[in-house]
Length: 72
Figure 1 (cartoon, rainbow, N blue to C red):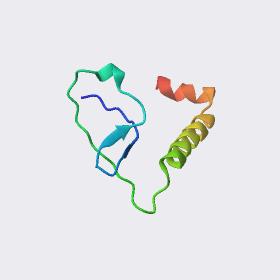
Figure 2: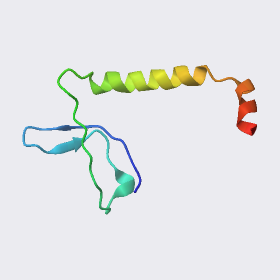
Figure 3: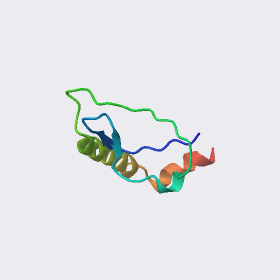
Figure 4: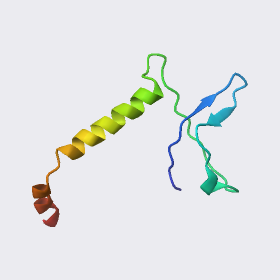
């Protein structure tokens, strides 16, 4: 199976609405794992920004000199 992360909302009828279409997977069977934030959780937009920032900062600390260790 291939994993794909996409956000969405659940309406009052309990129906899931994705934030973007999954056009590349039309006519395919899929499995859903739904992660629901706790009441005190950070909004999804802020969580996405935090993930982007931490990735950016991690990669910022990478130096071309570190490539030496990839050859070991």
